[in-house]
Image 1 (cartoon, rainbow, N blue to C red):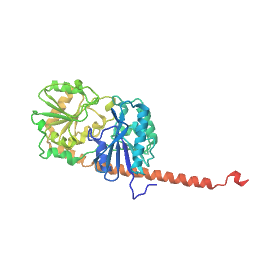
Image 2: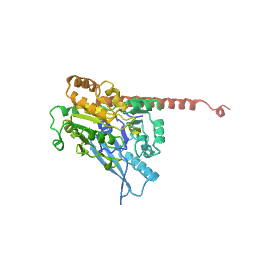
Image 3: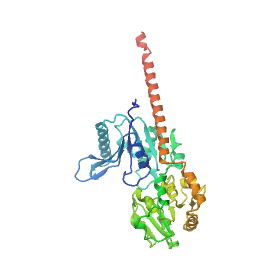
Length: 397
């Protein structure tokens, strides 16, 4: 059993690069790292003329980022076996005797064969099997992970409703908000230099631009409303850049650091969530929804379930799916920007959530699961001793 004076470490297996986009994993694990050592194990990189090894760095105190580096000709089962061995050796080398395993992807099961965690956690932030290019074995691996996990967290209510039918201990921990960071946008913050020359009204989006982004909707909106300037921030992944609509009033600014985002939001008139309605977006719960609101931006979104509930249902944002409806909704939100009553309602809603509160809840759930696991272990040991104490038939004869 774990010594309470020595907190367990935590090993996180993730499909997301730590330095890609600052989102749920970074918000949560940066808080965990203040309490106990964290290993963040990413997907491998294949490099020429290299022996299999680990690239190790420390992006913040208490957190070690590990990227497996593999030869270019190593893939499949061999790559998985090598990663599993490298991870096991590293954990032993740092003398991390007790630890929990935290998965962001079921694919991580292939590299944790040799680990013996205290608690197994699945933080299900997306339905990854519905994403473009998802490995065919991902669904089967998720079922295995759901069988092994002591508890499951979900990034939104739609995922909770789905996973709670598949596991006995599921907790909805919706995406939260760093209010202090994003509220800078409405407190006189100077906007970003590369945005200053763009005319108003500015309609903004930031996030990953992939198969979930409705490029057709953006293109039709830009053609329908040439006087509106669409500012699009974020990396383009899994789709060809030539698929993106091009127009004089669409401005692609590329990826920007999380710390810079309030400087862009400070100069937007309306923020948008132009997500396509497809399998990849059925269960998403965009973190940027409360972030937009905290920055003082009025919002228009397509009818994504976890945006409609609660934000659309209580009237804090507008919901629209067709270009003409979206255009009318933008006009409505342009008029509402700065409305005191609306801002008070936003403040009231956002005051109930924070990443600190989310982690406190998750931490409590993990410790409850740990206690249940230790109780089960103690009971099984007592039962084993009781059975062994019963004289066998051969002893009596």
